[in-house]
Length: 320
Image (cartoon, rainbow, N blue to C red; front, side, top):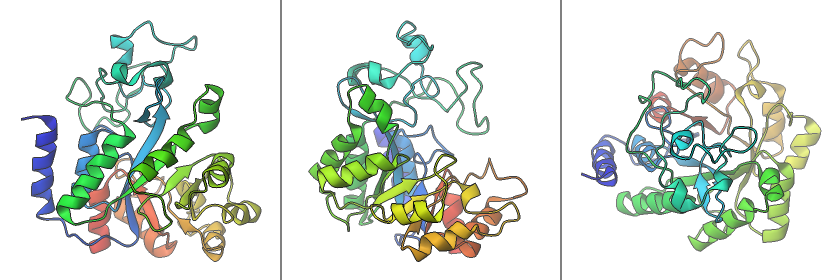
């Protein structure tokens, strides 16, 4: 049985016990079912679909021949066997960059659970065993076709949640993944504000440029972090071009578990709030269980959705 056939069989069984109705707030499968299978692989996307996620996330980088590759980092050495298969293809910093490989070469790599390239140790040792396995990199186009096909065969509407990774760096290398993404989405019928897509990025300049130059009306999510605080001025600016924000957990919850003031300020400006990342095996200090974290986020802070490595646990919490 091929890997695709196996994934389809697992999916069919899982869907028998998965309700068709989408959850509210949104459950966003962070890098697919990354708590169960190696991140951003097609099996991880299929399993996240089977678990009942409302949206599936795709981080995007560009290959040398302009293919949008679903990969969290611009480097390959934290999730693939590139150092073994192509030992001489690193740059002066010792890192292996996806942009230095054609798609045909990238397809030869084996994807494994995320690991530290210096030590070989798994970042999450209790997850899928690291080592050789039947997992490969995939293109954004592959994920679109998979999710659209499953939407057709199941009658559900699961959305896409692509992130443009390091756009300024890509531009310095002569690549434009943002424009390529908007064009690819339009090719597959995602071209209006009502379509089940959120385009996200940490770079405000990139989202503003895409809004201006492509004329797209797709919903945008401004990712935020240490270099982009949730000040009143920033939130007012975000609301001019984005439909929501994707803050890290510390920007939503204080150390005592109470909501940060930015939550109410963002909602007052009509911005959705989709924080990252809920992980059952990497909880914030003082939080004993994923259900406690979800209660703080969804019931206390009243965010509109969460990025999670563990969609099944998040959906089970919502149903209870």
